[in-house]
Amino acid sequence: MVEAIRNAGLPVTTAVKIAGISRATHYRWMREDPAYRLRVEQASGQRSGRLVRNIIDKGSTDWRSDAWLLERTDADFRERKELSVHVEQAVEQLLNALEGEMSEEAYGELVAGIARLQGLDAGEATEVAEAGSTVPRLPAPAGGDRE
Image: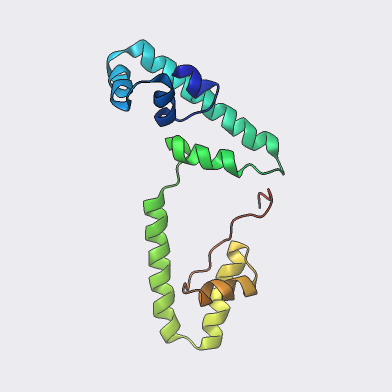
């Protein structure tokens, strides 16, 4: 179990299957056995450290798979989605309110300015807006481009 986490980089849900134990058993052992808990926590830390090193070492190659895995399996790397969704909804409401109060040209300039701040060009912002959203979104990086 611990080796599967440390060496293979597997999340707990997969490691318990390989070890032939239930998740409930694993979590009971985590509560009841301090030595087991320590070994699992150390293995998880080593796994996270290895993934972070991969992200750093890969530089211009594609690091997104490791980042994706870290985001989903380590709370320190998890996006705070509830905050992100709340902010996006507030910006959407603000832009919707402004759209009715501004000239079409001024509103277009505002959306283009937001797009520039996010690294989009005006054409990409228009495509996003035409797809049904007034909030331009930054597309996923192509290749392994970090910017």
